[in-house]
Structure formats: structure tokens, C-alpha cells
Length: 574
Image 1 (spheres, rainbow, N blue to C red):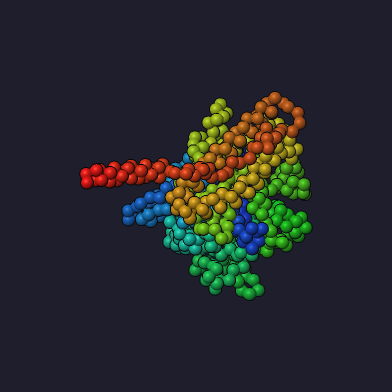
Image 2: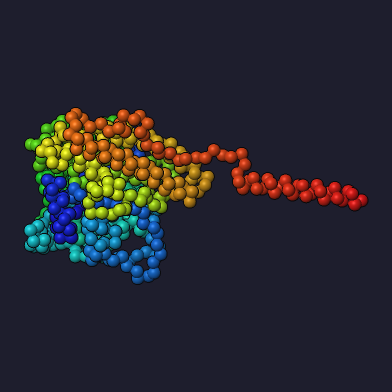
């Protein structure tokens, strides 16, 4: 996400703020995947953190469906353009604030889902070999040398990719084929890993160079962890692999081709030049997903993205959520310790948001996939659930006010992102404190907030089961329109409630720090056993007779009365 060679588009103020609050270099995000056979519920779970600068505002919105005439083009300030379909689809998107990346139509819509149940997260940055793409000078933002398949100016990049896919793809495979068509036609402007799914299957696609790509269908019986790349690939497997035509030729000509004993291309070794900082994330991921012994045994620089799960194959949804907050506490790789400050954690302080998709078996397509979204880094945040293919709008504080920084003068006038970002910042300790960010400081100021969100999160996961039952009934009995209305109302109410909890805890934490209080900070909500999410569909008790039914009954009584009077009149006439 957002590599160094894109810095020229970022305002000077944003760079300065980011450097103040982030002491690590800009590099790749972290993604993960759990196949349906590896989870405790049989759901497929996959997601990513979006790692950028410490203070990059994100907006969560719904893009409405639109009609377009032949020749209408998606025009991006990045130079990329592509013709619109005649009818675009409705979709959710988590995009950058206009204050971050300029005037792209929907800048860096990193994750979303459309009304056809296609979900996508993009992109996971990695580093392609200079022999293939050329050598980039970070100081001058220019190419020093060109490889044999360099990236294409005005080609497809993450600035536009998610929007282009979600506005038109009706299946995960169709999404992959669309990306392949664009790269074949126009070329790619950068490397990156993309995961796209629907209720039936998930694909992991990697843009490797200017015109080369590889996509594989994600296996149900394995898990995936980035910063790994795809490993050995059988290019003859058309059912499970989609690849560019010169995938082998390009690294062969560049002298970087590596194959296994069976002659299959090793994608990571042939195309990637990973920096050493990825190794710590791999260590932390293996520690979290397996154990410390497995992490210590991790020696190779490259490991296939898809690997066998732990014994028991019982990864939980909550466990997947907290993976993206992992900082190695209590291990030799604890990044909260001063001696490990240069190590890169999974739960990095400059993450702008974290998200995952949960695709559940035996659910109607409209309800099969839940988008869980946490604003700011996951460590002191909470994931909220969305029927992302049904909702037609989001809670307004997700996208307004759109400001370049947290508004200290008017704390109530801040977006969801800025409230959670400020909460994360102060949960590490007071801004001017020397120990801020250390393990001890995080524990003192942030553990109470973590404890509250843990209780809140687990309650949400449990309540989702009941909401699913009710939504299935509504969808079956009242139809799509009713399901869309209720899904939207439900998500807005939950988001507003959660936002208010975050604002209250932030206000209390500020007051605690300004007063110089001793001891650990405990938010009032943690002591309140009733401070749980009210995540439920409000149902009205059925009236004995509805308003419309009452009108019919009155009409019937009046009609019967008229008939009786007429009959009596007839009797008297005779």
C-alpha cells in the first residue's frame, strides 16, 4: 500500500505529521486467509491491514449504481482510464480522504463489496525484481534503469483497482479476468497482491510487472499469510490458475527464473525482491498462527502464501481479527520494547484501517459474506459487521466531516476515523511522555480500552448469529428491498452507538492524562456490564388488526349494515 515512489502526491503537511507519529518506513500491508476447512465454523475468513502513514483519514461510503452511455470513461488523475459498463453496480468502498491523495475519482478505495456479492481487498505491496521492472531512485522519484517488463505509465494501480472491479464484476473469477484484461490491454502501473471472493470461491492475484500476473484459486484446506507471495504454480491447471502468457518468458530473459524439481515456476523467487523487514512479520505471524517453535524454525526468505494450518484447524473469527493487531508482546520479537523498535509488527501504528470478510456456508448469497471493518489500527479498535452487498448508505460520521486532522477544538466534530485514530494515539500514552508507545505505557493507558473492546467484539460476534436468523426470515418473507432497508438501518445504528463509546472513552482518557492521575486508566464503560452492543433488529409486536386491516373491517361492517337496511326496506315495501 502506497509505496515511497508515490510520495510526490502527498501534501507536505501530511508527510510531516506522519513522520512525527511513525518511526518506520513506508512499505507493504499485511494480508491473511483462512480456508473454510481450517476454521471452527466452516466460514472462509480473509482480510488485510491498510498500512500507510500514521494520520491518513479514511472514509467508508456506499457508491450508488449508475447508468452510462457508450464511450463514457472512468477518468483518473493518475492518468488511468477505462470505459464504464452500461450499468454500474452499487458497492461499498473504504477510500482515502481528499486531503490525502488528490483528486482521483475514489482515491485508494482499498476494500469493498458490491451488490452481486463480490468482495475485494487491494493491494498488498511487495517488491518486484529490478532486473524485470527496472531500478527506482527514491531520492529523485525517477527510474535509473528499465527492466524487460517495466511498469506502465497510466497503467492499472491500486488507486483505481477496487472501484473498477466492484462497479461491474458479478463473480470472483470475472473480477480476476477483468483485471487480467486491463493488464493485457493497458498494463499495470505497479506490483501488488489482490484477494477477491464471492460466496463460492476466493482468488489471490498478484500483479508482478508491467504485463505479467498470476492468480490462483484459494484452497479450502489451507491458510495464507502475507508478506508471502505465491509459490510453485502449475500453469496447466486452467481451473485453478489464471496467468499472463509471458509469465515464464519474462524472468527467463531477465535471468531470474527459478523452477522447482518438477519444472514449475517459483513465482516469489523469480519475480520478487523482498526486503528484510518482511521477515519479522512472518515470524510474528507464525508465532500467532502456530507457536514460537514454528516461528523459530522459519528460515527461508520465501514461503508460499498458502500453507498447511495448525493441528486442529480451528481458527476463530475473533482470532483472525486480533491477528492484525499482533505486536509480539512477551516474545523475543516484542516490538513494544526499545531494543526491538526497528522491527516491523503486524499491528503497526500507522495502519489506517483493518478489515476482513467472513463468508459463511449455507447462507443465502445476499447474507453469506459479512464485511468487518475497524477504523485506525486494530490494536485499540473494534470491527463492526456490515451486510455490505445490501446496505445502501453508511453512518454519516464515516465520511463527514472530511478533515485533514483531528479537531481538538471541537471534539464532537470528528469523523469515525479521527476519533479512533486519536484514541489509538493516546492509548499509547500522553503525547509528550518519553515512555509513550512502550509496552508499559500501552498497558497503563490502553489495556482498559482493549478489555472493553474485547467484550464488545465478542458480544457482536455472538449477536450476529441472531441477526442472521432474523435477516434470513426477512429476506425470504419480505424480499430484497426490505432486507436492504433493515441492513442499512441496523449498520447505521450500531456504528453510531460504537462511535459514541469511542468518543466517551477518548474524552475520559484525555481528562485522565491531563490530570496526571496515577495508576491504570479504566474507562467507565468497562465497569458497566450493560455497555454491550445493541445489535438487533427492532421488531414491532404484531397488532391484532393492522391499520389497513382495520379499514377493511370497518368497510365490511358498513357494507353489511347497508345490505341489512336494504333488506328491511324491501320487506316493508312488500
